[in-house]
Amino acid sequence: MSQRLEGRAGRWVAGAALVLGLLLVVVAPILRLWVAPLLAQSPQVPGGDGQTTFTSTGTVTTLFDLDNAEQAVTGESIPVTHTVTTRGDAAAAQQAAAEGLNVAVADSVDRVVTDDGRLISELPYRLAADRRSQALADCCGARVGGIEIAMAGAGNPLRLPWFTPERSYPYFDTALLAPVEMAYIGSERLGDVEAMKFQQTTGPTAVGTVPVPGRLVGSEQTTATLVRTHAVNRTLWVDPTTGIILRSAEKVRETLREDSGPDVVTLLSMSLASTPEQEAAQLAQARAEGQQVLWARTYGPALSLGIGLALVVGGLVAIAVRIRAQRAEEDFPDEFASFDDLKEALD
Image 1 (cartoon, rainbow, N blue to C red):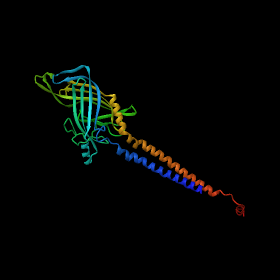
Image 2: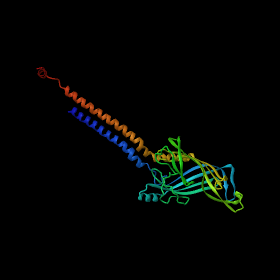
Image 3: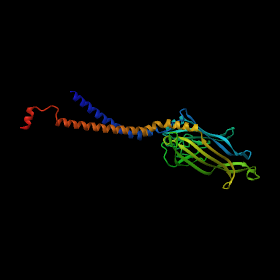
Image 4: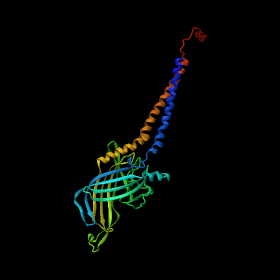
């Protein structure tokens, strides 16, 4: 009787292992192909409380005072702080969702101030970006400096796509008001993340015109109009899972020139880099947003597939062993043959 119960228990364990193993094998691709993409999207509002600030510090070596037509800074380095403060608009994002758009809507202010309080630049802008691909959309009142700009399809300057590809990226430059190539240049270890590095190198590009005192260009007129150019060399270190910008460094140069002529004056020469504290905060944000997605896309499927295959193999082996044991029992019964049995077998 006990042997029969043990046999039933063994069959049940082997069958259960086989079924559970098959289920886990099926779960692995479901986690990777269905669950992970659902989780891989930026929040409707950033930072949990709806606001984030990205801080960089650096120096200005050239700063021209247009009002007085004279250099305000030259031949020395003046410390500056660059902040991009972003506040999410949850109501606008929810309204867009009702219209079939899965976007995050955010208002940002890009501000550069010297340590002694002089405002160098300030630019407000409003962006709507797809929560997965981070492609910008022309909706929800998106604008730069109060002006509506066609930006649909360009890349979000606040973060790159989830599972950022190792290729060039159409980064939207809020100073140039156009997407520019952000080229993939390799990787670098930041903390516990193998960050992806992207670089944008843009030569002097016209960004508008500026009225200046006529004497600045040797004119007897009270004012003259010059073309303002903007050039930037920008490097971004990006978390490959979430697309969050972990570190940034940039050099900016702005000049005034006559139409297609040489530069008349250098307005601004500035170098910036994100602070170590900012980098640590970005790494923490990337871990917080990416943990569930990494489990669903990488760790979970690997564990599910590994354990599932082990259970399937174990279940099949157990079943095979039991079948072989049953055949052996049939060929060689446990009870000893009697004399009459042997005699009957020999006759």
